[in-house]
Amino acid sequence: MPDKKNSKDIMLPCGPWVPADGGVRAWLVVVSSALINGLIFGIINSYSVIYFDLQKKLEADGIPDSSYKASLVGSLTIGATFAFSPLAGILTDRFSHRRTTMVGGALAVMGILASSLVIKYVEALYLTYGILFGLGASLAYTPSLAILGYYFKRKLGLVNGIVTAGSSVFTIIVPLAFGQLIPHIGLEWVLRSTAVLMTFIIFAAFLFKVPTGAIIIEAQKKDSKCLNFEIWKNKRYVIWAIAIPASLFGYFVPYVHMVKFVATNFPSSDGKILVMCMGLTSGIGRIVFGKIADMKRVDRILLQQISFVSIGALTMLLVVAPSWTVMILIALGMGLFDGCFISLLGPIAFDLCGPEGASQAIGFLLGLCSIPLTVGPPVAGKLFDHFHSYTVPFLLAGGPPIIGAFALFAIKFLAAPWLNRAAIRAQVDISESKSSTAMPDEKNFKDMLPCDPWVPADGGVRAWLVVVSSALINGLIFGIINSYSVIYFDLQKQLEADGIHDSSYKACESK
Image (tube, rainbow, N blue to C red; front, side, top):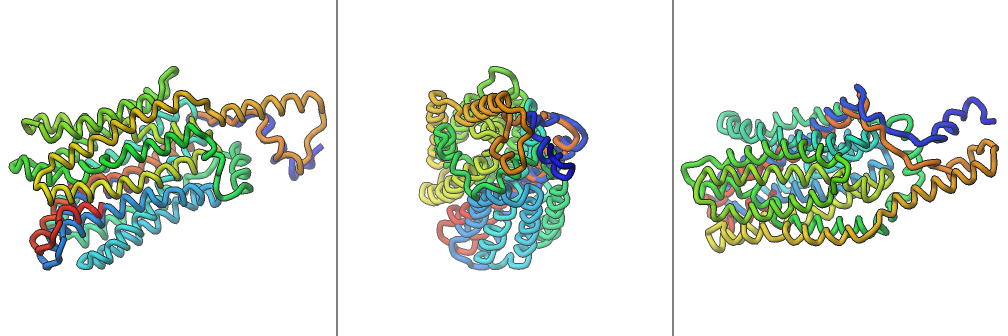
């Protein structure tokens, strides 16, 4: 018999641990995650507003290639946010969701605060706003999604939708706030105020504690190697991790160039309205499609394919929109299917790789996404500088999502290996328990884990707190990123006024 000191550790996994799928703490986690997502992406998605002002400043200072340089700031931010995601996944497995998120929040605050001090030096902004803020956003964003699987199973799609909807809510609010505040207090003080708001990420991270029943899984992760090579032996995940980034070469082009596109084609209209429309329906889409994804017999990957085809087609239709009303309808549709795509990233990662591989599966996917997300907007800006029109850039931007959607069909021909391994482990453990009634000692205990495949509880207070925290992180990060078109418009003007060549290309590179 085990002694009292170790009996809790030994007896915990005798049955499969199941997330509660509810409870006060679970929902507080949901709120915290939603807040974190909202803060991060609310700021990132609003860069078009910052771009508009920054480009004008650079242009007024006579800096060449003002559009290119202003856009490079935003491009580096979104690129770094996703490029560092593999590191975020590894750190989450090694040091916990809470610690990784807190460090990320601190770095994000430092990056934005430092940016307010070097606003006149665009090269310094590459480091502070582009790399440092992007690194912090990445370290906060990835664990805010990964923690949800420890509190929910049946409702995982719904809570992911709620969390990622946080970025949509902030994407609606932040561009308006930036647009009103920048003319009155200046870009420098807007960034300082934003840095203060970002400190909420650190406080929200305190709720990111893995439930007691899942501690065994966390211990196994820490005892394993830093890199989880098992996910790369999973052919279904490999296909998904290649197809998704390939689909995103044109994904952020509308978010960066929308305000400039409207100013060019509909001079009397306000492009920020379209950014808000996309943010509004994106939030609705994340919750609605998240709920749909939880239904039985619903194919989550098929939903993601539909969203990609729709996003690609609607991006192409922007260039032939005959009126402002049609533009609004297209923006609403783009936001709706954007919400579908985003809300399914976490659930599909759990479907393909299981809970033990989800953190790094999400991290590496986002890391691969950094390349197309960084390259797409500057290329579109370069094409605009060449053609003086957004027809070619937007038509080319709509192609990759459609191609990537069809590439995902390959997943349907392969089995899910992590489910097979879990079933085999369960059968082996059951047969061994029948042949021996002796209580396992602590030395051999890890070899017998888990007796059955681990199942999240799908609820609980903490689980929903995780959802809210993740939503906050998503909202902050992508609210800012998705609003870059407002910043871009102002930044490109400044670069152009400064006589900088390729101003559109350089302004969008900061995205």
